[in-house]
Length: 210
Image (tube, rainbow, N blue to C red; front, side, top):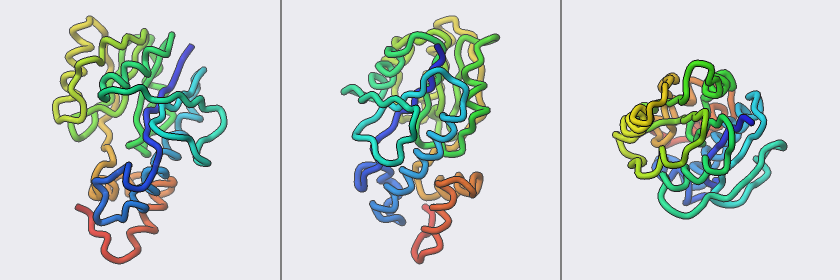
């Protein structure tokens, strides 16, 4: 059974995308987070998989599409939460976050193709990773990996190689963390929810990317 996991935080003002503030207000930053999540879930919905699971910190809202299971995130560090998400899967699985609204069903389908690889890693521009695919989910492959650092992607890749997994590499994507990131990603996908909202918000005064 193939599974796509999305780990996300409920888009609540003051709790998500705080590095977008300023230039955006907390409410605008939360709206951008919601738009990014909507685009991500649409890509997931169009990906041929048996299960689509949102691993959520918070409560689902009107933005949740049908056909997506929701499970709560466990307590602990990010490595523990990612490991727990994989622990709930029994077949080929790919995990992504909510910070790459430019993701496509084609990229996710590639990450679920294990004919020649045991794992897939999608590097992020900031040194992390935006996707991790495992033919046989093994939570121990994530436990202890330092998260949210410039070395995260490298350490995770080394962990996969040390386990003897044939690892394929997905294209590098840019996470939406700062206003400058948001502008760059919105320019790549101007017609998605995220790109359209970013265009509307930046038409207002005092929205200089940082």
